[in-house]
Length: 343
Image (cartoon, rainbow, N blue to C red):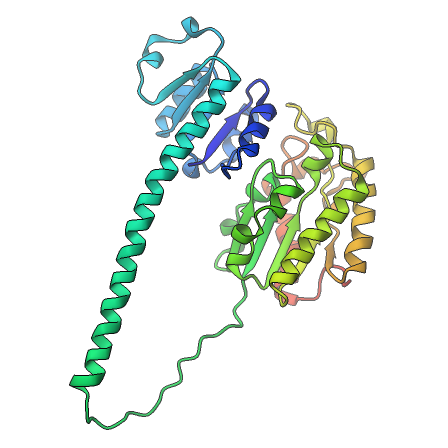
C-alpha cells in the first residue's frame, strides 16, 4: 500500500512519524501546483485537508481519501457517508489509520504471496519429476544427443537509480525506453533511509551501475554537518561496493535550488551556498575513495547560480526539461562509459 500526502498542516511531521514506524510505507508530497506531475496509479490513498474539488478529482481516479479536518460538521454529508472516504480529526488519528491500513493490506498480500510461492514450488517439482521420468524410462537406451551449450549471459547491463523524491519522480521508462533501468527513489528520503534498505533497493537487482542522488533533505530537515553528510554518502557507496564488487558507482552532486520559484515552501532551509560547499567536499571524498562523480549542479544552474527556472516547477523538484538535461548526461555514461569525473 502506498500513500500520497498532499499539502496538509504538519505534513512533514506526519511523514516523519510514518517513516519512524519502520513499516517501509511509501509517501509522497504534492501540492495543487504540481498535481499534474504524478503517476497516481501506484498510490492507493490520498491524505488531504477538506477540499471538495480535490476530493472529487481523486474519487474519479478511484482513490480512497483520508480527510484531515478539525470540524467534521463542515464536511458534506455525501462525503461522510462515502465508503471510500475516511475522516480524521487529529494527526494521531491519521498516523493510526495509515499504520492500521498498511498492516491489514500487508497481511493480505503476504497470504497471497505464500499461496503463490507454494504453487510455484509445486509446479517446479512437477516439471522436474516429468523430465526425470522421461529420462529414466521414456528415453532409456536412446542414443545420447549432442550436448548443447545453454550458458546464461552474465554481461547484461542493469542500472539502478537510488535517491529521494527527485529520483522517485524521474520517469525512467519515458526517458530511457528499453534500457534496463530501476527506480529506487523514495520521496522524503535522507541518507539513513538508503543505508537501512540497500538489500531491497540495490542488491537484489545486481546492478552493473548505480547512480546515487541524496542529501538535499538532510540539508533541509536535519542538523547534520557537511562532513557527516558526505561521510555517510561515501558509506552508502562502500556498502554497495562490498556487496557488489563489480558494480560501477556514480555519485551525483546535490542539485541547486531556486527560492524565486518557491511558491509552497519546498525549498525550505536549503541554500545554494551550502549546497556548493557540500558538493565540493563530496567530490573530494568521492575521488579519494575511487568512485565516480557527476557534476549535475553546473549543468542545472542558471547564470546566477540558481536552479534554472526552465528545469523546475517549485524551486526544488525537476521539470520535464530538467529531466531531459539530466538524462542527456546520464546517457553519456551509459553509452560511452567514460563520462563523469574519474576518481
